[in-house]
Image 1: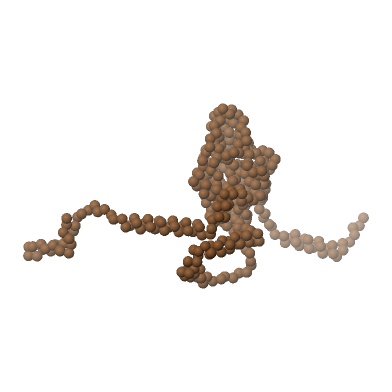
Image 2: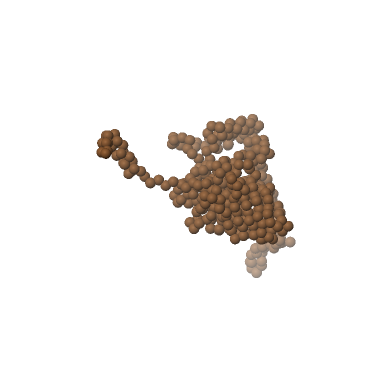
Length: 383
């Protein structure tokens, strides 16, 4: 049967489609996959994730995520192997319980407590092989395991993300990142060899960046990321396309040099107005403009992102919120000013203290004339 002739419109559509297909540029997409299993390092320092819940193995321990969704962690420990887990997360233990020892461990409380990082962990060890079952404290969460072999370090961004770990050479050090908001100051730097179990809100996804690629993510959604030569930097999206600069005429420093403004800044009325302005600005940012603070990552690196952001109740307790709300503006500056003045006073008092003389030797000059020595009378006689 002869094929019907093509209409002019059909020929035009075919030519247009071929032209677009010929001009289509090659686009490289960032790889985002769900982390339903353990993360295993490979030779190119990337992290490969299996689509199934494969266990993370080490010579002395084994981490396996179980449950649907993945909300339980099964830990198989060899004899004399130590397991650290969050206090109150141990569900059960199988094996010879008589040989098992459980103690409360304090993990650098003086460095972790100021930024809200948990420091109370339960240390479990046994002289015989045991299997422990661990869960999270939050109702909607998932667990992912990370296997570190010493070639790649990791940084945990969320304070409550570290659930359990094991490894003789594994080192966890807290570090501060004051460039971010108060809720994201505390990070944990992990190096060495061992197994980690991280917990996140909702589902945890893995984002892999190659060299030259960038990715912007909100800090409350980033659970952890692999350390690289280019650490993530704070990033804010532009709110306007207008490009102009306002010159600094020095009105701020000029106002501080005037006594009237210095006295007014210390009054209760000024602090009330400053508090009202701060509250209004915070409400506008949260309700209208939103939180524009993000993190910009540059490849090559690997990130673990949770689908649900951390709530403020997971970071600050009610007592912390009340203390922050009750603190008037300028209270921190007053405390710092008093501390500096006290240190200056202590240094001045130390300089005024007389120093005990240990050498009573006096040097005097003499002039010899006609066989006689005449001493200089301008200096007192030595005692």
